[in-house]
Length: 284
Ligand code: PAF
Image (cartoon, rainbow, N blue to C red; front, side):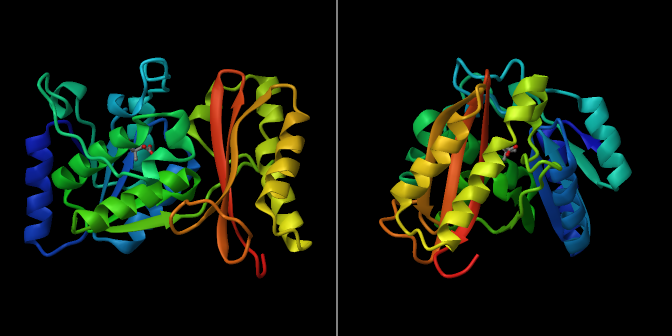
């Protein structure tokens, strides 16, 4: 595995691969890698000639009061995992090079960035869209891989790729869960024992929603009420949002008919976790 820090070096490495007519699969991450990341890496390897993984904790997607400083960083452990998985290039740029002092250009995906997580984390998706665009320009991937846990991020990236005609295909892979259903996330390591126990309520609540839809409930307000009620039974849990939205544009849904996303964000103590499921009014 080749470890690359400089942007120029990464651009040059990608050029050499492309000149050979080979394809590049790209997995952008913020590190603290877990099984869900490894799933993306394995899929990238299966589909492409070369796999590039980036690790960059992106300051632009954290608000000043958020967890940028304490975000888990384990570059050595991550590099070991990438090497074991047979990653070809590990790209770990510096903040200084990615965001020089006079950095002043941002990518904004309007509309989609203002709902759900975008409401509670203003500026977050502008930071994500900007860094992902920069990484795509540097790595020149044929295909980039993202997880469905960050459903809103995935939709925003698909939209920006379409709107800006970026020559990359986006693949979104299903959520990977722990035994009790908790979606894997680097932030799970913040949880205390009691919070971790209560965190399983996120997936229980989503399963409850699916059950209600299967029983014929089509009113999103009823689903939100019942899901919120279950989450509130856990002492450590505080709801940020529970929403039923149209899967195609994350707009509001009056009646559950075709494919919808039930998405939620819940605080467990100081840790904010997100999860979602896709449901259809027809059959789940
Ligand atoms: O999902 C993440 O880890 C990040 O938001 C991403 C896509 C690597 C951009 O920083």
